[in-house]
Image 1 (cartoon, rainbow, N blue to C red):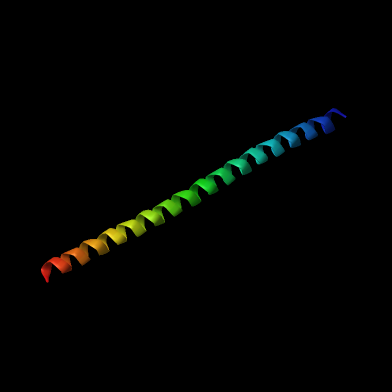
Image 2 (tube, rainbow, N blue to C red):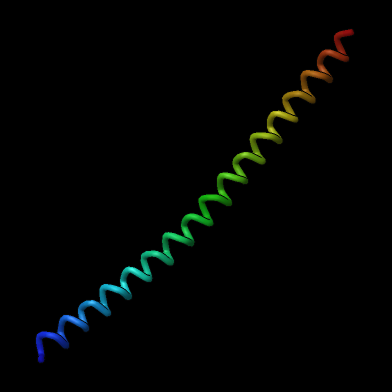
Length: 62
């Protein structure tokens, strides 16, 4: 009977560790998605700045 109780204790501990790991993974996934979106937004802003610079430069040269 002690062996069965010990096995259930270990299974409960393992399940708890898995739950924590899944929670952490979910948080990391959300943070990574947010970072990718921000990186894409920054890239778009950079492209708009470059386009604006070249448009102004071309306008000044005319």
